[in-house]
Length: 395
Image (tube, rainbow, N blue to C red; front, side):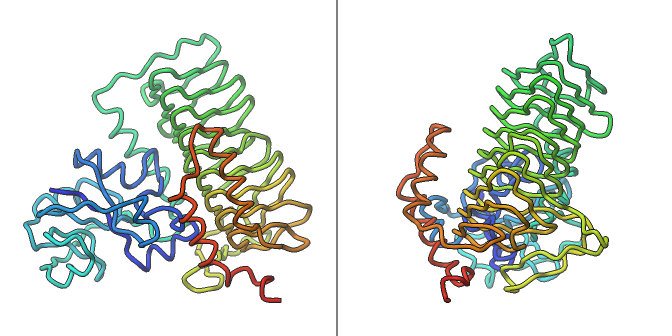
């Protein structure tokens, strides 16, 4: 069967700003993205049914027998078994939401022709931004088992590194580890290929460090945390997910947060993840066009791709930053910072598209990657589609 992961429209909107630049299944939760989980378990490559402006970068590939799965659903044993039992023309639904179906038509319109059966077991559904960090610990454990099953870790050879529960620690080839503390007593620790853990770093599991990523000297990784590939982190991080290609290299606290790709947090940037009155955190909802109650006491920063902040930036509890925003200055900026915003607590202007391209080109070149015409068209579409959020443009 040909694997296709689809964006359920309402979920896609709920997951903005992260889905401005990627299909839902390209979200990282645990060690892997949702797409990578399905690909490993089904032993095939996935394509994506997503918004038109993303389809050039993420094209759909179809055959006469397509297995189409909701890209917000994380796989588990029970769901895999139920999917394996489906015949062409059959599907699974939970609470009127399509989970998976088999069809010759690689379109969402095909659902009208499917014989859906109810699916009773619980599922892990990433349908809100905060669920990325909320489910990260559990998904990290699942991914650790999936990736390391039947394999042997590279040894910890540094005599000055202290480890606890070595059986729950896995090093890929090329890991550089010096004078650190790895405590996997409460969850696994995974260090990806060619990753670096510098002197004095303290790491508590569950924790994942992606390929070629760095944990800098004296950093404190407090667990339930994923650092994607080609990233650099320092300071204190707790229950957060950094998708990849992003830096939080210096001191400062990041908690209960999600950071996209190509982001940079300046030195001593701090996020609040708990309100002083201990009330539930409200978070900007693109679907609502206003703030929605998360039901959580702990919720920090949600930052879309290509956004940056200057040194000593302070983010209030439950702040949402869009794509290609640039935040700087003293004081707390507003809790919702639109895409292509430039400024801080004293006010914002628009980060014009040509300047945003220049910055993105320089940042991506540092990782040996190029901002090509496809990427520029995606950013241009986001710039135009989010103009209404930049309220200062209407004054």
